[in-house]
Image (cartoon, rainbow, N blue to C red):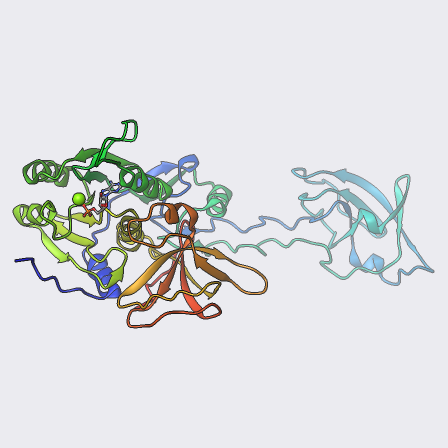
Amino acid sequence: MVEKRQPIAVKEAIERVIKRVAQLEKEAVPLEEAYGRILAEPVRASHHVPPFDRSPYDGFAVRSVDTKGASGESRLSFRVIDHIGAGVVSSHTIGAGEAVRIMTGAPLPDGADAVVMLEQAVITGDMFTIRKPFDPLENVSLMGEDAQEGEVIVEAGTFIQPGVTAVLATFGYTEVRVAKKPVVGLLATGTELVDVHEPLEPGKIRNSNGPMIAAQLARMGIQCRLLGSLPDDEDACFDLVKKAVEECDAVITTGGVSVGDFDFLPAVYARLGADVLFNKVQMRPGSVTTVAHVKNTFLFGLSGNPSACFVGFELFVRPALLAMMGSGKPYLPYEKAVLEADFAKPNPFNRFIRAVYTSAPSGAVARPAGFNKSNSVTSIARGNAFIVLPGGTRGFRKGDEVDVLIIGSEEGAESWELN
Ligand code: AMP
Ligand code: MG
């Protein structure tokens, strides 16, 4: 008799996975290698930024009191007593009617409290005139205006994007403490699979899920151990997965997880004594997605159907791996968008449609990315998002507002908001 599985809600499934997550250890990496990692400690400003009052323009540093009364009819004149570029400190103190020619980024000389931009001055020799008064601190970049010493600039758990790298460099971090990357094993199962470089034969298809998942991991900065591809053979799968469990934080398999005659992953989980968190989810595609846990290792059993495999990875594997690394934003970010095309099919389960999402000033729009079956590979290539249609709804029409999950973004969401 075919086993009857109890489908659980997507949200519940994600929660079950996240609850099992154990944090990975931390390590220090050189700043140049920190891009894409997850910060293990907050970044605190070790000094004010800027560290001194400075000129944001090329111009002349003056005393604002000396500029009072300047106008087009009665221009005021200044004498230039020094000339400094960025990185140089003037040894002069500015007196009445004096100015220092100063370039962007140079510290304001003593006595000065305003900067006349070059464009605001009429220059003759070592003199210039102005036609307007300047307020105290006008055109001055103030010490600490960007960051105050001691302030937390970036929280632990943040993805290190280039801006975070800039902040780390500003404060002299030559090394950065980050979460270790998870060790992930990847195995494709299916007697029908041939490798990418092999010719097709009758009844065979190329293993596209393996390279796809490796690329999904690469997008997260994670390299995987390629465990290869196996035919549908219970003992062979068991042996390989058992060994992988000892070495990996997560083992991803594709295929063989359903209730077919040659789907041996459920038996493998049983023989491993793994705790199966769920083996059926109220979602399309990918309802057979299974997640199990044994000896602190996750077993992600993704469907062999390419679209279902892709969705299963983004919905369950990605947040679990990010949470292991202590990410504060492990979930796919989501947006609202207006449907650009009718979607007539009813939705007994939540539907995650591979979609093209476009944000525009007139409002974001989304449309299905093409052939929309769980076995489609082309729609994954064409899409950059999932349109999410809630379970228990009928068809949707062009113009309806829908939720969209954005794929491939450096940004994440703190929580999973969708049901
Ligand atoms: P399964 O999940 O094993 O029942 O496979 C479901 C469908 O996905 C079948 O049509 C398989 O041929 C196909 N499939 C399984 N594994 C892969 C793979 N690695 N790459 C592409 N298609 C696959
Ligand atoms: Mg199969």
